[in-house]
Length: 98
Length: 241
Image 1 (cartoon, each protein chain N blue to C red):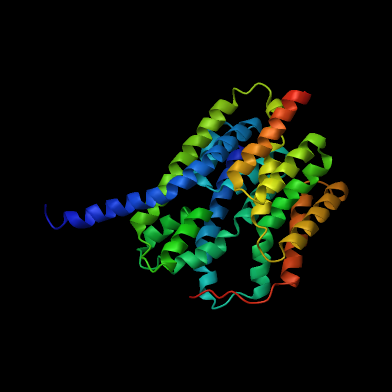
Image 2: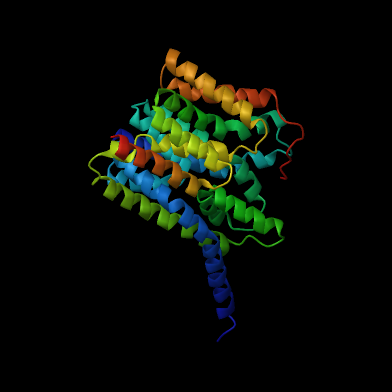
């Protein structure tokens, strides 16, 4: 089997475990320790930030503008308009600037 | 009409009422399903592999994270662990949903948990909190309404992604960071959000320049999570057994 296939299958198995595991494991405890809860709560934002920050550091002015537009859009709009507008800025910018 | 027809009609109507709840999610997630497919083939996935990943993982943000890391030729187990980390939030949804569906047979529960996405959790929780029963037919109506288009659109995106001559000109290399920033911003109401993001950002930038990729993901995320655990907000969350 190819590496890609292994990645897909293991990701599927572990993802299913997160979806069923909370019910099977976490629900046996009456309370979740606030530190554990706070740590878990921070996981998505922390992981996703590590995929933005280094990419932003090495990017150029056009990419920075697109990210700034995305950040501003997020204050008022949902994911879809945010992505379409900020992505649009990037694509149009690339066409114009070459 | 026999009396037996009544529950069937009810089941069908519950299924479709669930499907209606899923419809806005279908519209909102469609561009991301296409994007996933396009970026997947750009990173060396086949059309079948891209479709399979959407069908088997069924978690948009984690699939994108997987692609981003896969494209940077990072060790496979780290790609898998990063997908796992992004999906780990489901543990809390799962614990909360479990008590709403405890009246389902075990096999239905096992199937239901597979489809536990963010919107699925939110709508089931809302229905449960309103005092309504979260039924299997309703739940699966919503789940399949989201799942089937997600898989098909991913496959279509991958198919048409093969036809794009110059991925750079349409910004394909930088659309994911924009998408990830949007997700990061969507969590901004959470406790300690700003310090967590700031610490993860700084730590990941230092790590990528010292230890190198892919460890910036692990180190950056660990730094932010550690801060959140060391300085938790006041108040505790209780999960009923």
